[in-house]
Image (tube, rainbow, N blue to C red; front, side, top):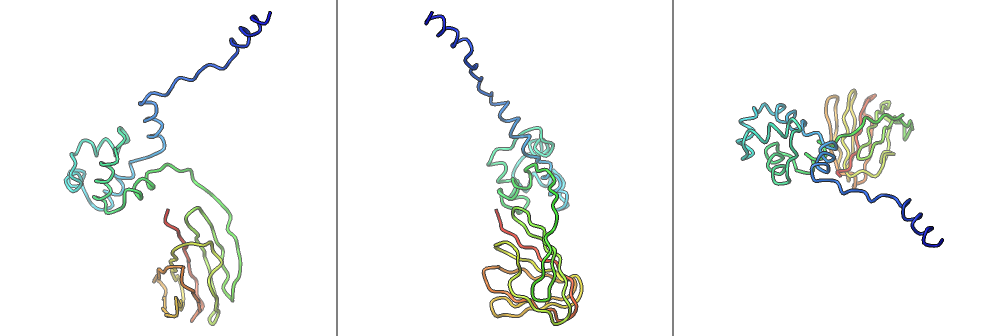
Length: 200
């Protein structure tokens, strides 16, 4: 009876899963990345595929096949393509990574006479703000980001970074490291966009 119970238990044990083949694993990786972004970046630089291939030190055929997601590039090829585009390999892979659209509601707050609506994503905060002339604020209430870009849409803003004052007029931007203390003063009624970002 004991032997029959053992055999019965053996027959219901879960089946061993077969290992995925190399082609199956590569197909899964290809699903995660869309290298057609290379074509978009190349065309934005006004480069034909032939000229781009020459810049990268590669032949036309593999670049064409990579851009149409027919083959997966190896690291050496990605390094050459990224160098040809003037970006890092890491940035190229990040751009190629397939992502779903992400929608979220903004968070509204006021600080020192400035009012903001902020949208926070993984590596990025985007804040739309406005202030009347004379309003002042210290470091804005956005996540601990490494860099900040302030763009003035309307008016005139003074941004003081580490004791140095910069005037930013409509249509201008100021990029600075957020490690330093910052102060914002609206010299005129101002509308602005503040982007805080952290490189991956």
